[in-house]
Image (cartoon, rainbow, N blue to C red; front, side, top):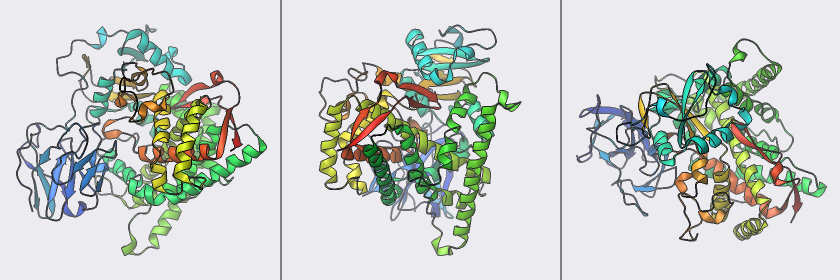
Length: 598
């Protein structure tokens, strides 16, 4: 079978004008889209009853990978922000602007799916700046004066690094330079340039080499730090584990964990005790993540095996210290904090090994007819890498750790920051409560997936909290090639750090940006309000947008609904005492609350 020959734009490079194999036909199902890549160009393959269709693989909205989306009622739905495209034509369904995905000719030969590309492709990575020739070099950029050899390294206080970089941006502009032990870095806070940098991954930019080294040293090398073909294979498995279809079937377990959290908070409310609510939320997210990803119920909220939560708490601070430290002393000698980290990593590895042994035994007992993976760890053990080989144990363990870390701190800290703002806004709590009471009826927690999805104001509260404090306030990359960033020629190997919060605090993007105003995210906001939603990017953007976005948003809806449905909220201490503390993610140090039953 073969699609009709259209007149596609063509990609340059070795594949231009040639038929290239992108998949085996048996890899492309009618139930979900399939990814393909040719010369760095991302494609999405869709199988109908009598054809295989190939489209440009990145959503024209924010360049999210469409192969990570879903097929629903004849539409390809982007996982990023829900844009829908007709699977048969590529045309966008509903909404503006009216766009159509670029189609490519396809043919099937000997069970292989072949696609023909040509001169240019909308999904080919572009320079992270204007089309004009660069007007400046690194030498032309302003920046804070540093010291010989070490540059600005000793001006960086790790727990406050995001604030330091943001303050320098206010002083030196939206593109400036710093130097860390001889390593040049360009720091960007212009939203249009940030978007282009994120879209140009993974070809033009990668994680810094320091991230790969530190993650590998700590046994946590997984999809977050992976690059190239290894990243694509691991990303695919992560997205399958976190798909909306999987989350829907997982919801009864999420509801059970939410009930545990409610019961824990109810005991605290009766005792009128002071809560470290961030710690409770981290236990909640560990229980959710281990249940979803490993089919293992740790029950840390109920006082069960909390070894993971206790030891994971040391890992993110260690990442921050080692990634941003001026001298990698730990490679030569160990301080007491390094020895404590080693012990924690060893304990976590023992838990991982136990889970892998149990999973392999479970898989061995199944029949061939029952070979479909039921969770992420099963998928990792059954999958093959880009060379057709099983993933090594180190890759399996690294991705287990990645899922645990990404599922713990980020969502928990985001929720804790939202609680921080709610303590000052009883009017917001009242409006949330009215919406939740109407949706839940007599239930104390959202009883099903649909009830958790239909909470527009709760969603707005979550979006506003993440706008004001994105827990990943800057992202660090390294140029894979000479590239233009804005109007600056950035040489290969230069670090490019993007500040994700400053665009969301720009009055040109949001009216009264310093205020906590959830209403700005609703459709009935005042027409005069500035509202550029793309300027807030708590999950990143582009093809490497956070794979756990859907899970995080679902957890936030469930936790916030449970909180306002059952409890009144009171701050203990002053709002000014709550400090932003960076340890790879931003935690609210000093946040203490007391709950009372409604």
